Length: 389
Ligand SMILES: Cc1ncc(COP(=O)(O)O)c(C=O)c1O
Image (cartoon, rainbow, N blue to C red):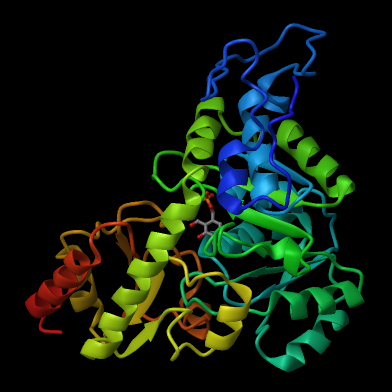
């Protein structure tokens, strides 16, 4: 399969997203790839495919495009973001310790707490924005350091380069869950991370029609481990899911520009109108890590978290009376969504730890979509009026 049309790393994000890995064109001239709906491949084919659990042309196309946009040498795709996490941790052994930033996605917490813990892999949580925590990393002798930035759902921004330096000082690789930022807005490997993990379900796909995950790395040994996990643990995605995700990735640049513009305007409205007690958005000057966010990210992304100071019952009523924000798990699609982290995404985290993370019963998370932002603002205004907020 000739690959002469592949863009080089110095070409822009959108060019790489749209043109990477066009090896399918062959003798048909097709500008869009087919879906290779096949479970197996005849032995001896030039692509080296044997069985879809261990590889498929649709995986490869998405992997080359993801590697191109994440500035990575390699990307490996999985059935979900959680499958990607499972692939990474499957390479660890009993007695290994992971040091993680304490603001972490609820299902990541659950995976370590209820699954990996049983196999002897433990996790220690620190506040990575506390300068003392960088010195504490060494004391735990970690096999891996793990963080998100922005974090889910408090949108805490962590300095990736600083954490990478602290991790590398003790010989530990740094994994950054890049889901909330997206590849367009932030590239962890360029900032010193060793693994960039994506739930491609979110901004990569962008259309809420396929669940998927990916791990992007420069190191060939890590890549081998990911490929091994994909096939040996059965963590592979579907060819159709990869096709949809690749189609979504091609428009990531334009979608993210609009997500950022809408979310910033939406956050400014919440702050200026004074209806919310707390408004968190990385590109609002009031955000505690605003300067770092501006340095590390190309835009603030599409999530806005707010606390309206309502009771639990009023918060649910408010969310359920929104017209353009269905209350749903997930984020990063073209359509806006709202979520109540304490009872949804972070329900697996015990209340005490949740509150320690700042996830109170009155906290709400908006995934600001690509609708007309003034319609979204009017919707929130009306819904708050109905609950007396
Ligand atoms: C930050 C983050 N990482 C990983 C995941 C897991 O991804 P998936 O739902 O694709 O398994 C999610 C899902 O919401 C997430 O928010």
